[in-house]
Image 1 (cartoon, rainbow, N blue to C red):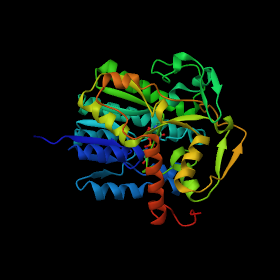
Image 2 (cartoon, rainbow, N blue to C red):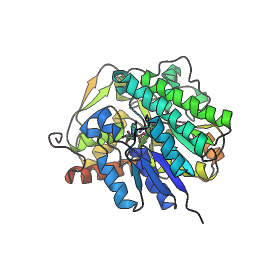
Image 3 (cartoon, rainbow, N blue to C red):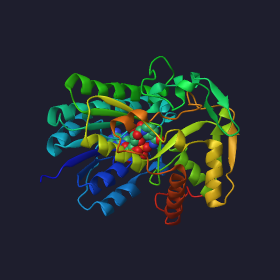
Length: 363
Ligand SMILES: NC(=O)c1ccc[n+]([C@@H]2O[C@H](COP(=O)([O-])OP(=O)(O)OC[C@H]3O[C@@H](n4cnc5c(N)ncnc54)[C@H](O)[C@@H]3O)[C@@H](O)[C@H]2O)c1
């Protein structure tokens, strides 16, 4: 049997590295693309070279390409050479807040880079399932217009229509997205278009909070990973507005990778799914503090900034019913306590062995 090739962009990031390991365990040969741009976006704390070492250790025939997805000719050439059986596109400038300072880098990476990959796929492997990591920020701040009720430690929807969370039919139009949300809308619509216009098996996954032990969490991206790190290092975590009761739905990166594989095994054309932990795996910042404190025994230090992040969701959890209806064998395996435990363990190990913690940044 001919071995299938998977091209994974952003292969050293949280999702890309998980996908590489997961797909490799399922017999695919992994071709990873990542130029460690995360360290450029976020500085040394965002450095993912530790993750590349981990991939090389765990996937003996892993092939790495230190290529920028903005390099159109380079991407066209690589896809023509590898002729992947599946493409998983996770490389991105992933931060809502960072985008305003680097609009060209943000748009060229998120929108332009995605177009480069789509066109490369159309020319060289149009039949290959193409999974794109999109984001719930494509809905802009529109979820904040849903009626809410304030509970002791969190906000929740006060509208029966959203009892199960936000569905894929929610409008992406006429709201404030942040420049990041806007560049991701461009990519999301383009991925859908290559599906519908060219009949290609493309899919957008609009992520809630994707997390796990392998995130290089920083203040501007990867809130749970960063929050746990702050707790362990007894650093102050800054809470931005909404009384710390803002709600996020959290999904372990391996559960995301599991869904991607399910899609690749049985692809559809131009699909869109909201992917997150759903209501069951949701928590507010205040609730996250309590959960990490219970695991580490350390009180969480924090300061409250009375100004929410621009366009930040007050309450967001994904309605997972469409994914479950299309892929009934898929389900979330990691519960929220499992996710917390793994992140705490991983930071203990990484900080103790000094992995990915450049001198001067500890403590
Ligand atoms: N983590 C989340 O909570 C979350 C939520 C919703 C959506 N998403 C989306 O999921 C995807 C993956 O997110 P993540 O958390 O794994 O991010 P990440 O930053 O951990 O991984 C992205 C990787 O892409 C690489 N990269 C960035 N620009 C590149 C370029 N121009 N060329 C080559 N490589 C480049 C980075 O070095 C990094 O290793 C992104 O599209 C992000 O927008 C993430």
